[in-house]
Length: 253
Length: 286
Image (cartoon, rainbow over all chains, first blue to last red; front, top):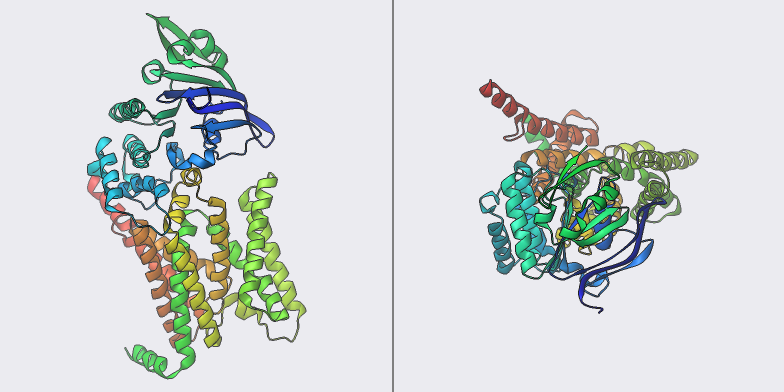
């Protein structure tokens, strides 16, 4: 069955300064899936996506993306950073930030073409931020800024997306625009990984869930994984959970 | 007015003044350009470190009779690598590693100079510049450094910009972010040598940081920041050489003072971020 998966991870272990951040992670994700990576603080969620993208030293294990090594497919991978990782005072306009999505397709001697500009304009359009394109990125609200970085990922025309907490610090409208856009991408056949902190709406948002706490607690469809026992295991009992009409209500402590 | 006329007529008749002026302008442009990256990467301390760390390389190059530039690049890059190595392989944080490495290199340079009593290496001139001693050869070297540095930045503009703005994405799409870091360090070493005669090792960092920071206060676009920064560098050099000539004071220091004055103007009266503007906004609200 090799080749049927967008992402295959086998026995992945990653350490920082001798301390294991992730241990023996294995899973396979088919094409056209919206995947939530869920777990408590320090569970290694960001480490997992950075590891898959080939940015970290991997102690052991094997990663295949589209049945290739990461280095061969990096242009097809788009990344939306955690909002705290961005320097808000950086002198860059919204449209310039979105244009960075075209950089992987441009060699150093090539200039930006009309086609690149059209792709950027359409990405801005899809996320409803055309009117903000001449603003400096620090002048935006948190939600608008997340839409800018998703627009950048769209402009990259990638097949695999990694988003690090895209809903942190966003308003309701931005969150809705973002999740609808992600679902549209999924319907186009793309695979999307979302690091997600908030346990509410997990079942509405994701097709599959990876429940993580340094080790893989559980992986499966969001309906199956999101049960009381699994969550308690991942969060070591630090949350309260109530089940109502087959829906979970989660309260953090 | 009299002073300006006198300065212009002197500029026409004295070659050393012409050379000082050209050297100042070139250094202003180069430092202004590279300084923008240093500021946005939060590497001001690193810039200070590399410029000081160049000293032993320059002295050894002088003693053994090869080019200052080669000596400077070697000692600058070794220091940069040493800082990176200490940071990655111990619990020492990078600001401490920078402090340890550059003072060690600088001290080595001073020991080497003072051990050579009676030679022509003048510690004072290396540390604070001696713009009157600029040779035609130095101008050509400075010009070459400028062409190389600005050429590399323009050719790989997008890679430099992305790795500064979002290093994670840069790395993810295959841009060699580590190599870019060391290329910047290498360029810093070259720029320091180019600026040796005009401002000297100790004040190079001002030419790197101050014009760029002034530009940063005035614009929201990186490409404009680059241009403004170079313009401020050039203005500082021209007026610095002028004041130094008219009032007979140290050239490097007066160039730096002009740059600092420009920064103060932007800080107080900038149209968007200026202190005066903020005060006005606050008063209107109240």
